[in-house]
Length: 39
Image (cartoon, rainbow, N blue to C red):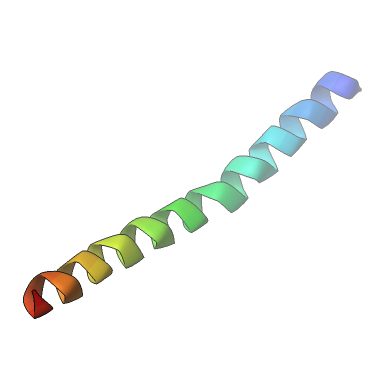
């Protein structure tokens, strides 16, 4: 049971982390674009 629980937690962690990382990458690219045009 503990193994299944660990796998479930890891799966949910990836499901939650992936979109956050994706949004972070997009925001970082947008900020670079904005500051790149300003500077």
